[in-house]
Length: 253
Length: 258
Image 1 (cartoon, each protein chain N blue to C red):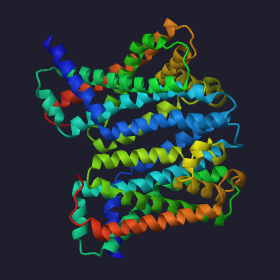
Image 2: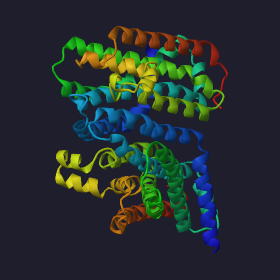
Image 3: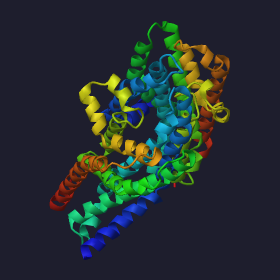
Image 4: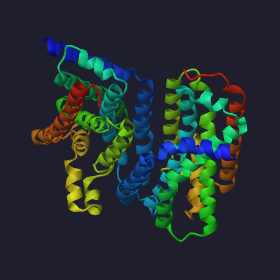
C-alpha cells in the first residue's frame, strides 16, 4: 500500500505546489454561483430557487471535469513518456491502476470540498445520511467518467490531437445535453432523447434527489443508481483491462 | 513598406495557426453552438421572456471573446517553446511582432464570430443584417482589445507559464459574468451594487452584445455615439496588451530569456 500512496503523492504534489488550479476552481465556482447563478435565478420562473439548482449542477459539472481530467492525465503521461516509466516500476498493474484511481479520487476531493460545503449550506436542512449518500454519488460518477476517458485513450495512441478534440467536444455535449443546468421536464423532446443517454443526467438527478430537491422534476432514482453503478463498474473494468493488456509498448502520437 | 509586409506575413502565419488547431476549433464550435442551439432554447422555456432572442446574439460576442483570448495561448506557446527567439531574429521590429499578433488575434476572432453570426442568422431572423457591416470595424478593434488582454496575461505569466490558463479562466469568467451577455442590465441593477452595475455597463462585452442585439437583430438605427463607446472601451485594452507584450519581448532580447 505504501507504493500506491507514494505514486498518488508523486502526481498530486504537482497540483499542490502551489495549489493554483484548486484555488482557481473554487474562485470560479464562487463567481459562477454568486454572480451568474444569483442573477439568472431572478429570470428563471420555472424553478422555485434556481440558484440552489444551479449550485448542485455546478458541483456535478466539476465532478465530471475532474473525472475526465484524470482520464486525460493518463494519456498525457503516455504523450510525455512518463507511462513507460510507470510501467517499469516494480509494482503490479493492479496497484498502478489503484494508484491512478486514488489519485483521481484525491483530486476530486480537493477540488469539490469547498464548493460542496457552500452548496450544502446554501440548500440547508440536510441529514448526515443524505450528505454522505450525495458525496458517494459524486465519487461514483467521478470514477465512472475517469474510467470512460481512460477507455477512450486508445484514440490517443493514434493521435493525441484527435483524442483531445473528441474528449473535449464530448464533454461539452454531455454537459449541455443533460440535466446539469436544467430539469429534464424542460428539455425539448428531441434533446430529451439525447439527454437520456448522458450519465450526467442520472448523476445530477440522483445528487439533487439526495439533497432534497423536488422529485417530480427528477428522473427515477432507481434507474439513476443502476446507471451510475453500471458506468463505474464497466468503465473502471475497461480501464483495468487496458492497463493490463494494451498499454505495453504503446506511445501516444 | 518592408516592415508592413513582414507584419502582414507574420500575422497571416499566426492567423492560419489558429484555424489549423483542430482541437481548439472543436472546443470553440461545440461550446458556442451548443450554447446557441441548446442552452438558449432550454432556458427560453424556463423564463418568462424571449431568452432565445436575447442570448443568441450574445453567443456571437462570446465566440469573438474566446477566439480573441486564444492569442494569449499562442504567445504563451511561442515564449515557452522558444519560437519567440526565431521571431526576434526575423527582419522585423519587436513592435512589428506585437502588432502582427494583435492583428492576427483580432482578425481570427472576427472571422470565427462571423461564422457564428451566420448560424445565428439562420436560427433567429435579423431585421438589419447590413448594420453588421457598420459594426464590423468596431468589433475588430474590440477583438484586438480582447487579444490585448490575453497578451497581457501571457506576458504576466511568462515566468510561471503553467499559471497562464488559470489566470485566463478567472479573467474570462469575470468578464463574462460581469457583463450583459447572459442577462439584461435591468436585472443586474436589482442585484449588484451601483458601482458594479457601472462596471457591467462599461464592459466592452456588454457594449458589443447590446450592439449586436439592437442593431443587427432588432433593426434599430445605428447610434454613432454607441460605436465610439465600443472604441473607447477597447483601445485601452489594445494599448495595455501591446505594452505588456513589448516589455516581455524587450526582456527576452536583453537577457536572452525571462
